[in-house]
Length: 350
Image 1 (cartoon, rainbow, N blue to C red):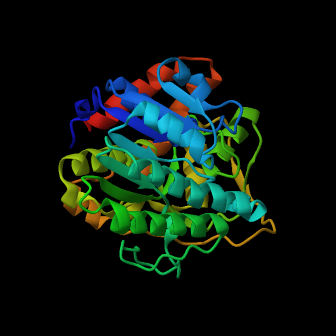
Image 2 (tube, helix red, strand yellow; image 1 turned 135 degrees about the vertical axis):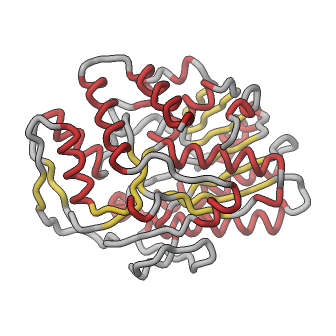
């Protein structure tokens, strides 16, 4: 457990705030009274959770490119942050095959640019770079990868995130040791929840199918991923940033994923969604020619559990239920902000 009131009055610089996880995290921080500055491109989906929550009305929202160092530094210096959480990324595997140059520019040089701002700051005390579970050299074995396993993501997205990890490690060793700045990386699994409108993700695809009444199409129903509800990793991010703020010895790299019994196949997840949604929803497998994607990936999260006392809270069944709840409220033009606030409170109390 952590006391989220720690963030009251804290100046937080959050990249990627217009994305799915960024919007949820912005709401969580604002609810706790943090002074949040977001830096990101405009949302790449329509609709977007960022716009639905009207976050620009309640935070300093800077719309610009993480690749633009001058613009980033101007926003960063104006925010004068104490805590930095880096979410901005090109996050889609299949998209990274289509635009590898942009993917590397954003995910690698974006990290360099942000750490350059941190390096020249006199106020930052805690930095968290959020990468992905896909940073590891994936041999598709049956046990979870630990933080000391080799980094070597296969596809451009995964590999660019491996590079982002290495950049972070280099900056720590070269510039931040003895500087009073705690820096960690968090390698999170596949996240879903209400308000994700991205393309090429299983749960958003399921929700779109439910909205239109169309059969859900799965490319690979047998692939197994570490699926988890969005609040689980976000809570972990806030925990890491807070704990290392007060204790630099806790700065490290951490896996963030579900317990073993929540590693399920895409087909199992889609079946669970159809059951929770009802209305005769179903899915079918339709293989499509496409670039390589891993079939099995598992994380060992014992380090985060033993070091910080974190543990995942909502199992996959509850996670799908809460996603369906949000999506049906949205479909019915209901109060999604109240739904999210309620889910955050329920999650935190458990």
